[in-house]
Amino acid sequence: MSLNLGPMFEPFSYKSLNLRNRVVMAPMTRNFSPGNVPGEDVATYYRRRAEGGVGLLVTEGTTINHPASNGYPNVPAFHGEEALAGWKRVVEEVHAAGGQIIPQLWHVGAVRKEGIEPDPSVPGYSPSGLYAPGKESGKAMTQQDIDDVVQAFADAARDAKAIGFDGIELHGAHGYLIDQFFWEGTNQRQDGYGGSMANRQRFALEIIRAVREAVGEDFALVLRFSQWKMQDYDAKLANTPEELEQFLLPLSEAGVDIFHASQRRFWEPEFEGSNLNLAGWTKKLTGKPAISVGSVGLAEDFVSGTFMSQQEAVAQSGIDDLVARMQAEEFDMIAVGRALLQDPEWLTKVREGREADIEPFAKKSLTTLV
Image 1 (cartoon, one colour):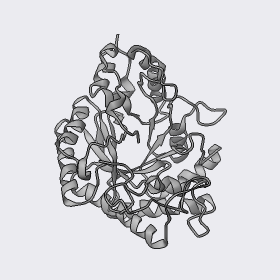
Image 2 (image 1 turned 90 degrees about the horizontal axis):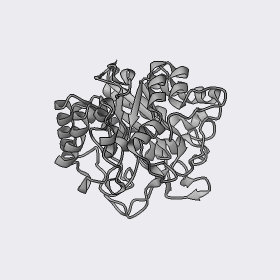
Image 3 (image 1 turned 180 degrees about the horizontal axis):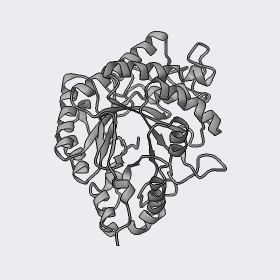
């Protein structure tokens, strides 16, 4: 018997987004773009997920036009004639299949190591030369570096609109560059970009305002953020709802339309005394639409590596709980990652009660999760 997934399949509209349902494909780096150019196989990959019924696809992280933005091999760029032509093909394929798509614009910051393409001599850039608390890596950014990166984000957003994307997402999560400015553990600057939370937000606020100016008021701007970092799963930007409000409101006022609140398990409460998850608190505090994400439909535990059947996976990752939260309007959309990576028809099969037909997850299909 199929589950009552009604709230997941309601349409959603906001500015340039007019979605057939509220299921989002989460961004996942795949390392399948040799020369940093997305080819026909990349277009086919995204089209298949759109054909599987997903309302909104967020691309894998795609790098802006800054020499230190990339941190991994075979990651697609979002600059240059050839790469943008490849992304235009992706957009056309997704639209032809009835979906909508936004690129995730990305700078990895101190995660980059020398030796990585496109120029192996370029080190990682970061707020104060730290990869993690007490761990030095790369180059502390000058004011000119900051200005260059802000402009590169704005240029990428402008290009996204020009080639037909339906909005953009800024990657401000998981310990990459924007998040390295947010996180006190990696931002030890002594100028106006460091110190207080307000100062540590300044870099992101400049990017958001520059992007908004580049694309206009009606083009949807999504910000992905997280408490956890790849450098520290237990890291926190905000320990209380009051601190989270202090963090979110300036970003909202600067021009963020939708917050993509990344947590490792969507069903876990963010703060004691409330069952709201991170996306739920984000919507409550800002009044803006929120996307939740975290281990939806996985057949393998995120940490332990324990496998389960697909039926168990659907139950274990709280599909009933998810539907109840969406029915209660705790958040507006749900992003699904590895479950859609493993099976482009995952959503259709879950909707039709065919969990046993879902393709099993193969680790070899994915090098890096983002």
